[in-house]
Image (cartoon, rainbow over all chains, first blue to last red; front, side):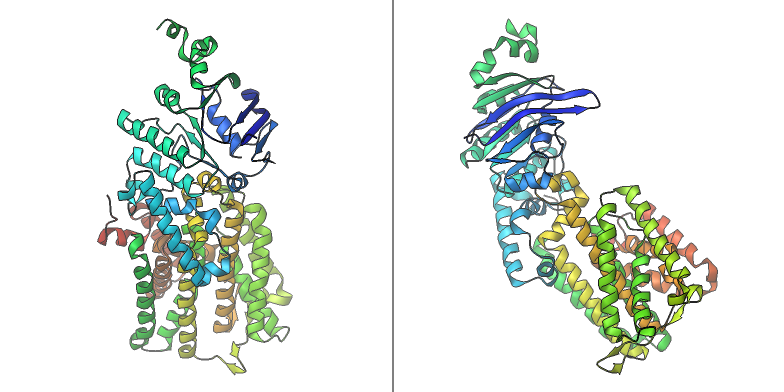
Length: 256
Length: 316
């Protein structure tokens, strides 16, 4: 059984069909990439898969349960994590605290326990901090633990968001253009990081424009164009699909 | 910064305790004690309000309404219905918590200016009801309030009150520091940083905002009830929009997202008008000027600005 399934998923903004009648399934293991030209509806789709947008029509099934119409925090509780194309860092906190917020689903406690700081809470907080540090190491930001988020460089913030999403221990991690704005070295680091996340048995959904990254790391690729599914299959199949080459890479690319 | 938090926290609490213990050496007479008590009571309100404004990033321009309801609720139950003061204080605080919960549910879905206007409206309604229901509240003339009594002993005299308020202030600071460093407290700061990002890591933003709104209303109502019993007299002025603005100014001046900042903001802005007694009716001008100057020269408020100057945040 697939991990995530969407049926007839559509999103309309005042007459504009950003996503139209999409049907696809994301398998339990592997890296699933979503590509398409600018405005193809990729980010809209991620927003639909995390509850940030409510679909105009269609359904979202995750891990055997229907999540359609639920609030974003319920999608998170079901096991879907994500990062953002435009950074959504908590700039009023340190790097470590950003990651610790990601542990919220597993650490939250009653108001009384928080106000009176029960010993059990103090212990949980130490464990939370240790796990936060470990995740910062995992994404290669160990040296930034104490840094204020607003003092960190762009490339580091991209990975900080990944660490924060991983802290929630998701089953499915959606990465919205993790390599956008990064130089080739940083992009390679993201590539390796995605492989290590995959090795942790977390399903990765990658939305990305960097074709070398997508083709190298993906097990399956979904191609969107004008909010519709244009093609779906292995990286090899999709790369050779004439429709994809024409719509996405441009007509000239066929001859290249 | 995080490594030092534990020590900074207990250090700050110890310093506050030391100030409260040693301050009487400098308090020459009952008038000074009176000012110190008012500082403590305002500080308790500001600590709660700072959790809402400074940490969670949600504005309220109606907290004097909660303060006034706590004060009048406790006053009416003791003076008109003969309740024991502690029971009246507790009942008024619980009632305000309930009201904040019911009103907060719809209005906390609003953001920014819209939330400001909604809380402003709430404050205005409460203040008008208090002025008009003169059968219970004595109307614009105010009403007398019986003194607080603990186990049959009336709490009277500035010196006794000083220690009670001092202890409650330390308690309020301790509770606020605990909350801020808990998962729930981080969730509040996360909402301030990015509501969308907070939600996709599993934080129920409406529930968290409602929790902190009710908590801040409880701090205000409790301090309001205490103020009424301490003063022995209460007027609708304490429930007005102007008082709400005073409270917000204390929080903003002292420092957003700084519990000790809220205490210092309350201390400075409660004391300042006393020093500037010559200004009389122009007292509010001081608050307006302080608010403007704070926004221009230290938008993060006094304590965070000083903290950043003397201990620059580590940059790796």
